[in-house]
Length: 231
Ligand SMILES: [Zn+2]
Image 1 (cartoon, protein in one colour):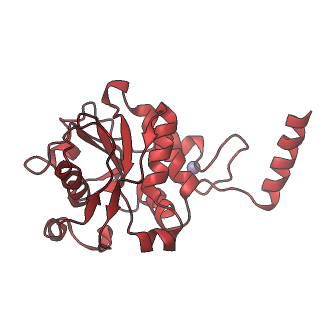
Image 2 (cartoon, helix red, strand yellow):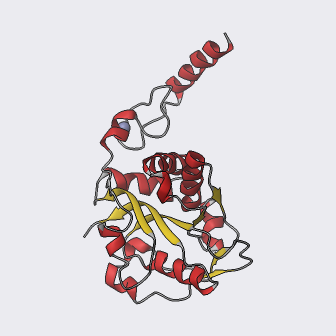
Image 3 (cartoon, helix red, strand yellow):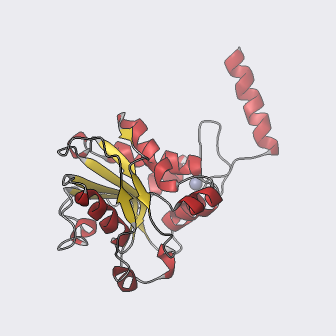
């Protein structure tokens, strides 16, 4: 009884405040959240089979030795991934980020999973401004899919960097520096750490994060990004 009442009131609520799909803007059904089933089915998944032999992993050759680089979706200009990322980053889409993290998590094979996930940190001022870190919400969604730990304490961003989308791939390579630092790392050195970011464009952010972890002795690193921007 209670369940059917909440079902009725839930749907009446949606008559006044219809929840729209983050992908196609159609009205969501009661059982749907964030993104509709049709959009989930149509997501441009990379379906990379291995973490090492794929275009995202090849981007790091000669730069960082990741155990695996995993990207869930292709990013194309004006495509659904761009729209989802925009909502996740700039329009308060923290629940959407979590949901996308879960979807991503479910596509990963257990043998590829790290022991702990570390979301790429935002600079403290930007986190305050946005109210959340989209990469952290993604990581939490992934973690929920596999009961993984998420650590947001040991890595911090030392300087605000320019927006990733505003500078080209090659410009950003010049920006690689010590933009991240690790402190109070409590894990044994052999632990497998998974870095989580929203979009892989030039790889410079993940490269900087990996260097910060390598500096404090961690070598077993993987990278997980919601999107991979192809050029
Ligand atoms: Zn949709």
